[in-house]
Image 1 (cartoon, rainbow, N blue to C red):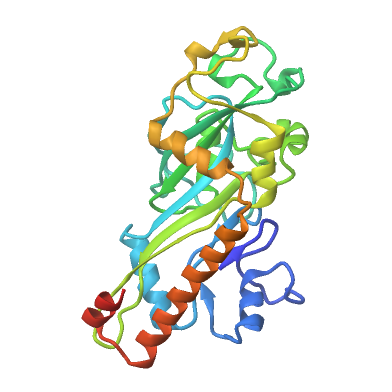
Image 2 (cartoon, rainbow, N blue to C red; image 1 turned 45 degrees about the vertical axis):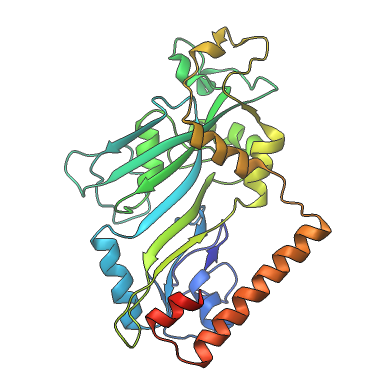
Length: 312
């Protein structure tokens, strides 16, 4: 299921109505009163959530989460220029009984590993503002308040606020994160009106069928319109090898870390226009129709695993 930013993942006994609550929306729209989310997203985060409609499916997915075989990837926009362009951060996170800021990573806590890859660096064309909250004073060039890094993040665990807290601990908090970057949130709202964190990809194994066979399942979710607007219209992407008078606040583009080539290609795909021509729309419709007919055929005739593979 797709969870919009601002929606809660789970329900509480005191929740009224279905609006703004993902699982209540599932209960009503899919007529699945026993459905339950297998994992959670923060209220400000958008993206993919797996919802199980029965206990066996929920147990199957939760086992993959515990065994770290379920892959979850996110897109986030961070302050400053994240360097190196790829890496991992391991920092235990303390348990929080309330929704209060954890502040820092604790040495005693639950294991949490966050892996990141920089897709591209962005800059504010208007130059931003001044002041201590905006990075006034002596600072690392990678922490320039005019610069931002679009990162692809993969987590092994999924602790409370893991990505937000780890990136803030690295000195690169997420844009519009009022909990871990409160001093800049007012300025950030001019760039993006919501937390810039989106669950964009998920891969798992589906529950076994009647013959015990399991099929891999992958799903991707494009950037919401407001996040793409931030990258395409509010900020400017600094492509590797290009210069705009060579510097921003006196820092040369030559000093800027260079993301991997495949990361740049992914960034291009994220920023590409989604408008299709008439021929493109007809081709897309035809391909979806073929897939639907294939799935109907497989379901109607009860194909086994080998027959499904042959049909596909």
